[in-house]
Amino acid sequence: MLRNRRTTLVVVPLTILSCVILGAGIYNIPFVEERIGWRISELHANIKYALSPPEEAIFTPNPTVVAMVQSTLDAYTPTASPITPSATIENPATATITPTATASPTPIPESVQLGGITHDYQKYNNCGPTNLAMALSYWGWDGDQHDTAAILKPNKDDYNVMPSEMIAFVNEHTDLNAIIRVGGNLELLKRFIAARLPVLVEKGYDVPKKGWMGHYQLITGYDDVKEQFRAYDSHEGGPNLRVTYEKFELYWRHFNYIYMVIYPPERESEIFSILGNHVDETYNYQFAAQQASNEIYSLSNRSQFFAWFNRGASLVQLQDYAGAAAAYDTAFQIYPEIDPDIIPWRAMWYSTGTYWAYYYTGRYYDVLNLANITLNAADKKILEESFYWRALAKEALGDIPGAIEDLREAVSVHPGWEPALYQLDRLGAVP
Image (cartoon, rainbow, N blue to C red; front, side, top):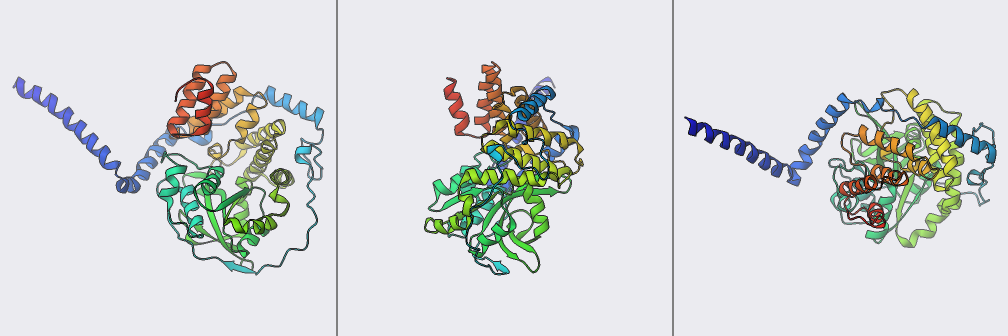
């Protein structure tokens, strides 16, 4: 009897362990993972968010520092902040933009629809790579979302692929060129499409019971009579999604009206002609900052939050970190007033401008607090940018071991990520 009991005590744990190992092995088969991986991830997220609602995690900038930043801005750039609807911003970084006079643009058709694109529905958490693959297919690129994801997302759980990473993929791994700009408008999109150039955009997306998140779409057509764009959507819309100009613009604002165009090198002069003054990146960010400033007081609630956020993002690119920090501070003051059902608590998954602004104005504790809130709100801490900036803030505050730990975590969630590897090397640490 004793022998049988001992045998049972040994056999049962071994059986359970074998089942776990077998299950893990089966799960890691790509075919199986693609079909059940998202369900497991979704279950994990639902449990996490039920226990700790992410919309209740509110970042509050240090009020003393906010007052100091505002005082400095008032002293050196009196009209930069606060902004009034009719005010001209005198800060050189956000000077009122006057486009260079050009000939009247060539009229375009009232409707255009591009074809020749291979549509694909995204696999688990694979929005960016899928949309990029669809955009490349228009130019005859022979690949799919697995090929783009292999470089863009070595960690399948990575929440987001940055637009800059997608542009780098095109420029470094294909024979095509790609360009990225912000501050776009509907007319510009239509001009690209009329020139037989589909446009990749990043925009907001409200998902029932999941809340707000970012989403890429490939814009392939427009119809001025119906006032609609046509898009290839990798999630639910498929290859024939219609979206009104009004709704498109509403959600496009959430990402500073960003747009990406892929093109053969021989068509570069045509691309530059359509862009006009926006070929110059400094002009483009100045324009986008002014565009956001013009919108701020005509909007409210979440739209106003994003207008301030966009202003901050553009000012960061112009290295006006104090002005950017002030814009982000105002955005975060609006944030708690947004309806909890549509509050953009994932905003920091897609943007690093806030970290830049606070870090380069010496607000290291705000960087730490924002990174902590962002990481703790996520169901999986797969946010290499937040680890990276938290590491830099820790280093600035004298916590070198903590900085190294965070940089190693950044490399862990994004293998081979060069920014973190560079910082580790600078600190004399191994990944």
